[in-house]
Length: 94
Image (cartoon, rainbow, N blue to C red; front, side, top):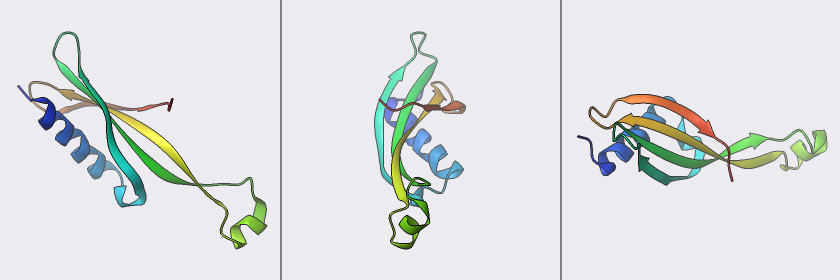
């Protein structure tokens, strides 16, 4: 059986494999739990990603104010027996 540290490590590895995380800031483990039947670890990883803003207009782009940062969350469902990724989904921020 995969323990909690291994499940978190697997989830972080999947995040790195699927995204260019060097563009993310503040990549953090947000929460982890195991399903009631002990079959899956649910690992939530949060990060801040740069978002282009269209609200400032063209002048904002010229003076460097067109970038906003948005906190995002990904929930990885890791098989507790094998460590394989079962699913990944986005979670809305709180």
